[in-house]
Amino acid sequence: MRLRIDQSSHASRWLWIAVIGLGLAVVAVICVLLIPRNRAPLISTALETSEPSAVVPASSPTIEPAVAVIDAPSQLPRLDFAPGSVEEACGLNEFPLYSKFSTDRREVKKTSDRAKVLESDACQAALEAYMNATNPQQFLSGELYEASLAELVILENPFTFERIFADPTGDLARVQDALSRPECLLTGDETNWELKETCHADALLNYAFVNLFCFGEGIKRRHRVGGGILFYEEYNNPYRKPPTPEQDRMLWKQDLEDAWMTAKCATLDPALELSAERYPELHALVISSDETERTPFSKGADALLVELAARLGDDAAGLSQGVYVYSLNGWRFEGNGYTFGRINKFVENGEWFQFTLKEPPSADRFLKALHMLARLDSPKSDPRDEFAFDWEFVARHLCEPPYFEYQPFSSGPKLVENGEHSSCKEIVHEIRQKGITFPPLVKMLDKFEQVALELEVYE
Image (tube, rainbow, N blue to C red; front, side, top):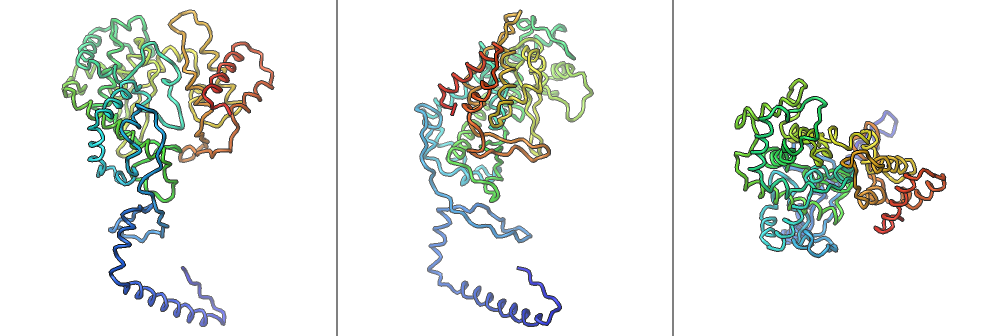
């Protein structure tokens, strides 16, 4: 509290009041210090069963503003998990608050508890099945406020972790064979999808992602919760809302995913690493596909391998999008294979990226999305250019919260609270009232409405 002393005739009176008040405060502090020691265990017990919303280091040289301490329950409400899921098989309902074990990422306080749950055969089996079926590209992006291109298009041969870890040694041999032949070394805007088999485009993609995850920075990802990304050190920030029970369990699940990845990479031969020191000629050939002047911020070998795979016709590589994270301890993966893939011929980049944002439902947003889908769904002269959509993803992406607002020059997307947006039902009704008659657009709207109703995300 700051006292202001003016030049009026009452100055001396207010000064005496301040002095008296200060004296009373000193007396109160002395009384607190004289409380009997047998009261201490009650305070100690309270600290063991609750957690402050912010922790100020004892060595801090400055006095921080007072922050109200919010009691956190020692156990979260139990959630309903699908039988056989990672959450159910690994017993995430029995896990303590994530914040109790990860307030500081560098200390890894949760290691023993995580290792214990991973000893369960049921947990191991569920985690193995789940991760084997996971798309590595979605694993990298996976933000709640945006989608990835790989989520929209269904491939005949899905890109999964099972695929990239099936035969890393064989993939390296095939990469060496492909890069030894000049016809496979495409540069600039070149593409030649006829070389997909002979230039081992699938092996190029597999080997790129093995290097990214196991010898690069692939598992040092930031953890995600609704409303944006959550850093470990921000978990106890008193100025942000605490995670919901679902978000807290999500953080534990991501830890189990990372543990699986670490264990999988530990089984690989270190000779698989593509580095300038280990494979100077091979590394130089990969880098040569980038015709721009090399700088410290240029694309790495793993990103360039992804793009080369896309140039040579690998469908999964042709859907890949770069992941960009800039921080002192962050990393950068810029394998934008979609710029060389088939889908890029039918989608304008601005149109696609607008669709990926998790914005609230609106007639304008829906019409742009439906026009894009109608264009992708139109008959193609080359059967290889036909696309199958994951309509469940489309419906959930457009109709299921959370939603976010994107404002220019802001620090990040802002979460839109429930009730502050229209439902999909209202938006579809508004679109139909406009009297659209273009058959491909009507077809897309009908299909979208049907799936949204089936998933119960329509209203």
